[in-house]
Image (cartoon, rainbow, N blue to C red; front, side):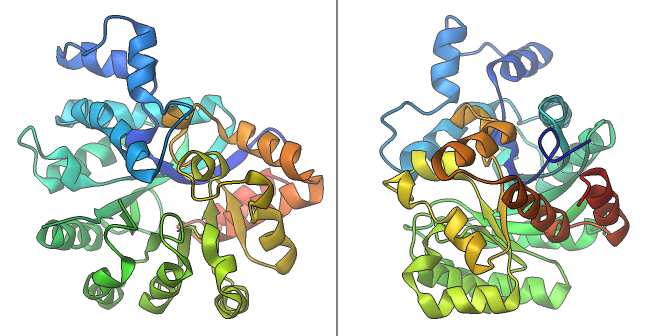
Length: 329
């Protein structure tokens, strides 16, 4: 196999990967009536319009997918179906992230949600792990601590929960406000990535790094601070970049200015990912093609992106070695 047909996705949100087909299966399984008269309307509810105005508009697309994953059965099957979908698109390893606190509206506890997702992962044909998302927002502190506690309880090197994340409206709820959460994560020995430098500026990335983030979700706006960019390079901190997502959320207004290849050339450990493939109507293969079309991404650069992903994965050294071998890296 080669790097042109197989991929590693390190930044993949469960609720952003619920396609029309998966939504219909989840609804049928649970006896839920979908709020759409046909597939076209359902597709419009599950994906962003071409005139998406901001990250906040983008985040509104998660309501329907989340409503289909409020039972153990629904969440378990969603994990399996999304991972199978990724496998069919050439992904050979994926880290699927979700926020347990967003799956408690139907009576599940966060722990039951985590257990259901783990059950779904066990039935997947695709090799992968879970990242538990804490959420930015009002009154999330206690819920986030519970998510962290569960990450600590279920933490493994491979085959389950491997890290936590911080997701949500970054510009409205700054990264700096979550320092105590991540200080405790360090105390617990739980690895973490943080969405930073997407809707907020380079200062958000600096805060995440100071907290001890192993990776940065997006990191697009790091170019705003030359000293910070040097720090990222010196420390070898990987960026989980997601071009289509960043275009649609207006993290970058002109994609000709998208810094992926510039970061690569400077030595940033950039990885290429989907983020929310159903919402964005993309696949990882299409993301590689997109960067090839815009920047003339070379075969050597593609290999570097894949190697960075294998090296940065929250998994065991054995699995990393297997991924590098399979991709001829």
